[in-house]
Length: 424
Ligand code: AMP
Ligand code: GLY
Image 1 (tube, rainbow, N blue to C red):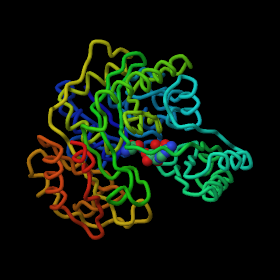
Image 2 (cartoon, rainbow, N blue to C red):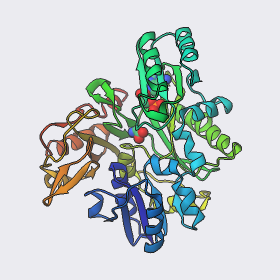
Image 3 (tube, protein in one colour):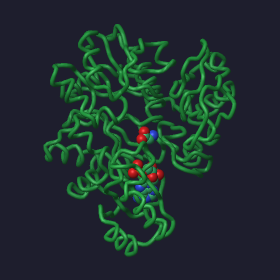
Image 4 (tube, rainbow, N blue to C red):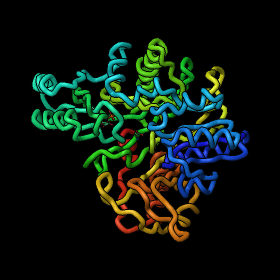
């Protein structure tokens, strides 16, 4: 079978890497891919939002399964389009992907189906939002309703900051139409976990637990990014937390989506806040997390392709996932300045040396080729991922590899995985 992976980041490199190992697969294509995916798949120069071109390519190349990485094509309706033309595709339809594309939708869904989450209000009127902010007090969280590449959330430390943020978002200055409505919610404290599952709309198979590191600097300091590193398993997801996440978060959400006439098929990613064994849902994503996908797929023992096909066919019953006992850690190497402005085109040294280390895989994200050399071409550049018998062993191995790689201005966190060690 021929498989097409859509996207060009670290998540998609990991998907290509895993899918290419399946005995069911003859050839993998990746659109648009990156220099990392090019070593395992044929890259196709079509952007993720060019749905008609992607469809034409899939039909022409005889693609047996398409796997959608990022949220943008999902929320544009790529799954609906491919299915209308009789193609098998892994991911939620447009009316189900709204669970990520609209925070107001997902909060209202959680309220309706009793999924634990922070108290909130949805506003498109500045004066009404201000009343809510004054009543709640600070710190308080302001979120743009629509997709904002992980940057639409502001944790306001004062009432005035919250009001200014709301004004900025609702007036359309920040985030354009994605900010034409805002969700304002109670500030939660605790430790975050990424809880992902695959579902056919009825059956739910959880993936192993994982934890992301959103802030750009060590100790969770500085602005939020798309994610500076991740590890799996995450000890914060105790067996009791796992049960709550399965029954009160995922089961209620999957059943709720079905009841709303929006059956959800694909990966459902719940961002959780855990405090003293209590679980609250911060958000849903309609896709694999990036970088969580990288350590998760390194730990996945089972062939992923039968699972993806079963979801595309709408019946996961009877399937399960086996995991390596080992832990996996992914350290993101980023361009200096990210998530703000950063430079591009810097030559990356040491990739071959790192790749020779055992149980290490260097997933590419923002890279490109220039004169035959690999150069930086994005904020998050590489996801250096390793397996180890323990989280500590995986951390040590990942940083060994990170230390082989360099370019001018490279930035990475030095504390990825430390929270897991603190809990063991
Ligand atoms: P979201 O995209 O909604 O998950 O928000 C992005 C990040 O903002 C989360 O991963 C948290 O770190 C933080 N965050 C979001 N909502 C809250 C909240 N209610 N309380 C505290 N932190 C939050
Ligand atoms: N790592 C967080 C996300 O993929 O949204």
